[in-house]
Image 1: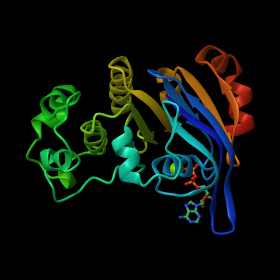
Image 2: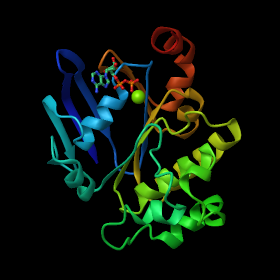
Image 3: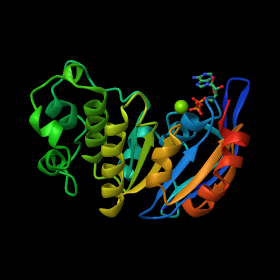
Image 4: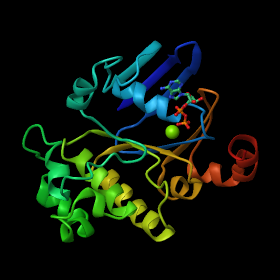
Length: 231
Ligand SMILES: Nc1ncnc2c1ncn2[C@@H]1O[C@H](COP(=O)(O)OP(=O)(O)O)[C@@H](O)[C@H]1O
Ligand SMILES: [Mg+2]
């Protein structure tokens, strides 16, 4: 579905992505784990066209979308839930969702989103700033879904959330996958990645250095953790 080959990205003189290769098969959840600062957010920003790569290819269903403007990438079917959620604090729940609806949603109209997220349904007229962290995360996902994406990029959705809310997040992510959305999940939270991902990747120093299915990942978890994930 989404294919990344040899992606290189610089910030000024800093060479951040140093040849990222990643295949995201249709209908699956791929997780990318890695320490702080290894280039995870830069990878999703480069996919979205928010940052320009210096080399490499991003392809969606076999066609290059490399370095397209963000609105074109979005229209092609890639939606992005940024780190930190970036909810509009003064807009209501419904306004936050509606603002992202370019053409009338087919797969994920507002009514379906409110069904998927009961806590948002109860708070339709609340402002973004009045929501809990978990509700803001669900709202950020709802806002991404209203554009009917083929691929959803989630950048550290569990950040700052209580374990119970992370469990609800896991339920939602699996449900979206089962509804046909292909998902790239960037995480620091190994637990969430482990319970939802169909495949796990680890990024270090701007490259994918390890890939495994959940079974192999669990078997090698201790080595993987000490080698790539603990500080
Ligand atoms: N806008 C920017 N300008 C310069 N350097 C940046 C910028 N954004 C991120 N970086 C640097 O790029 C590296 C990778 O950052 P990032 O992709 O955010 O890492 P991660 O998401 O894995 O924590 C870090 O060293 C970070 O300091
Ligand atoms: Mg990041």
